[in-house]
Image 1: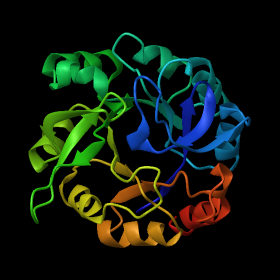
Image 2: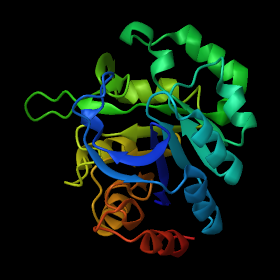
Image 3: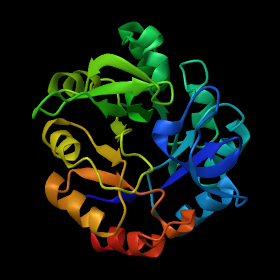
Image 4: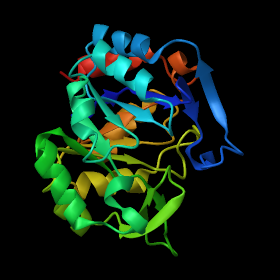
Length: 259
């Protein structure tokens, strides 16, 4: 059944909400919807208090490691963590309290899927502790929807399509998928309904979608069009992140109503 999944996005060690398409290596042109001095650990404690599981802590660049680990320690076993994760440091974050690590770019060196790295990662930490982030951008031509995986903070478009075959193959290595629709992430202008429907139909494992949600109605809408198979992350629209579209408490009430 569709659930609300919380998030803690970290940039320069602070909790922020950023327009995903504005991220770059140089930092120029960055568009920030929200920034707070409230610590990542304080957000984690709030999620723990409300019993909302499976949220993701995303480290957007360097300088976020300490804040991420503080959040994981505050809600041990309740959060997933991603951003710069590889086989070399994955266990470090699991030991710090993460239930799962979220990996994208490391398994796509030079923009190509490295099957050996994927096997090494799964063998190192176990399938049950791995979430693969297949965040993507639309590559549609004409009326046929199509998406390709985007890596390196969504700056680099790979040749790997988010297809039925891709989802089936990669599901053998991980416990869940996380997919941000990078074209609409942080814009609060509506979700990619076609992508949600596609994921619901073809993902054989649990999956969380993020991008464009702007109201509580989007939770019901995601539930309807995915037939309850896709969880939803709401970020910039939430009141706890300065948004006006949806109250965090209403999302918690929604989750409780699905039990």
